[in-house]
Amino acid sequence: MQAQAGVLDSPKKHTLIQVYNFDDLPLITMNVARIGAQTPGMASEIAGAEKHFAMVGFGPMTWLWLTPDKPVPGGFRGFDETEIDGKNVPETDGDIMLYFSSDHAELNRAMASQVCELFGKDGELVKEFVAEKFIQTNFHEDLSKAILIDHSTNLDTEKSCFVLAQQFRGEEDILSSQYQNSFFSKTDSGAEIYTMTFSNNPDQLEESAESVSCAPVFRGVFFVPSLNLLTSLRMGGIRMGSLAINAKWKGH
Image 1 (cartoon, rainbow, N blue to C red):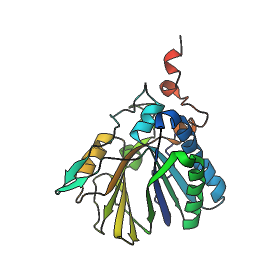
Image 2 (image 1 turned 180 degrees about the horizontal axis):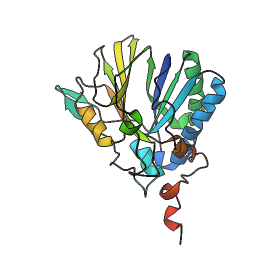
Image 3 (image 1 turned 45 degrees about the vertical axis):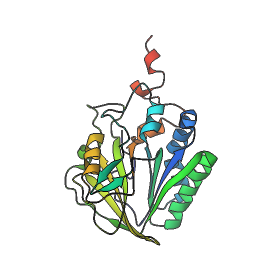
């Protein structure tokens, strides 16, 4: 088992993050999952020898439809709308998150465009963030132990994790006690900070979301399956142990 590239890796020079929603998700979940599972491979074909990574995360409803009889341990769910410093904070949004990073902005765009083409009219791009600068967050613990699900917790989801993605207006650093990558961008509407906070416990991410110094304008929470678990989706079904679609009939 190994984690997806991008979970434990520092971002490259250029980063592109996209979040999609889908109409009729229950009917097309497996197709969405197959495209997500193919994304790292497609990205490698496009990138060739260029250093890069493409990471895929699934929103709570997407993963629920993929594994209806085997929920992710830890109570993975969307976060409700709330209030921070008197400002409304939106509920979490997003059915799938794509995280591309390389040394060339045009390469990230090429990889993302290929996935967008496969999603077709079913996919709605609800958030896109093009990072101009990566802000390293100090974190000195063993990252694999701190943010990846251990085999003793759940063998099927070993080396998977959860990520909280949030977007803030302004240039204020958004600190977190969890492992976090932060990105900066300047748009026509002003400066923006985008954070990706990782954990092996979704409850910790909810606590982190409620303790930020200012209200985000967007947030989403996603399950990032291990590379092995992601690969198992390519054939149209999860085929690993108790997460297999036909697991309840095995052995009968």
